[in-house]
Length: 110
Image 1: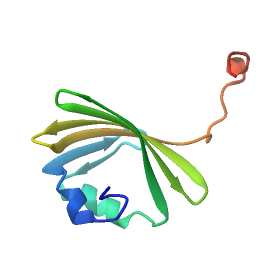
Image 2: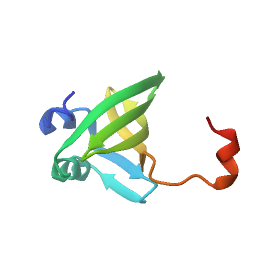
Image 3: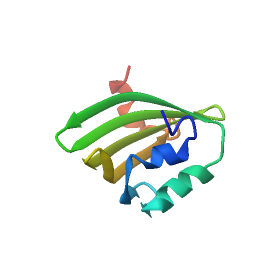
Image 4: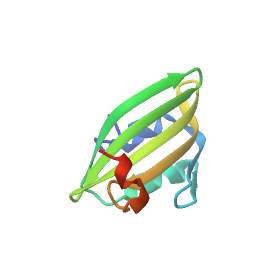
């Protein structure tokens, strides 16, 4: 996997030149080459595990785990694809077990 190996030029080939990526949790939007530039600047030490990928016509959904510095982050992403390149993405990022569930739900969990 090009992202995991930090082969940025190779990874960029999977993105449209004018790709649009939205992270709703932080309301950040990355357009075009700035998305890959942000990825390159991200602090080192992470590993990626692709847990699940589902395809439907021109849309791909993925569940990805990213481990870094003893924490696990989850990305649930939806990617619109045209000619094998991502043209638009929405990625929901969260840190595993970073929020306490509301007390009322405790009786329903395992």
